[in-house]
Length: 100
Image (cartoon, rainbow, N blue to C red):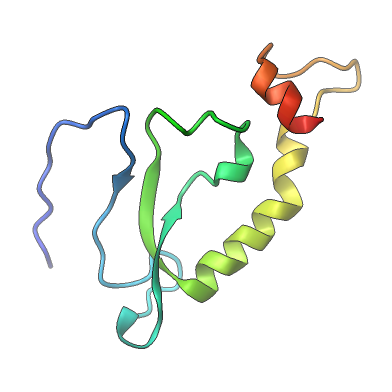
């Protein structure tokens, strides 16, 4: 198993974990296209909130990354909708604008 080196994280840059296999299906990248996948999908947060700040990336094969992206399309907006009284989880203009 490869040794993982730990170092101080820069909060303004993404953290990309190393890997020779897809984080989701475990298949080797020998016959698949390797991609960087945002563990917390960019569609799950208001626009511009991951431009600066911590976000985690893992290596994933293209088919798994594509399936995850389709799933995110289906459920991401639901996580940002206001409650039945019209209240958002946070009073954040980026969140409200993303939902609009």
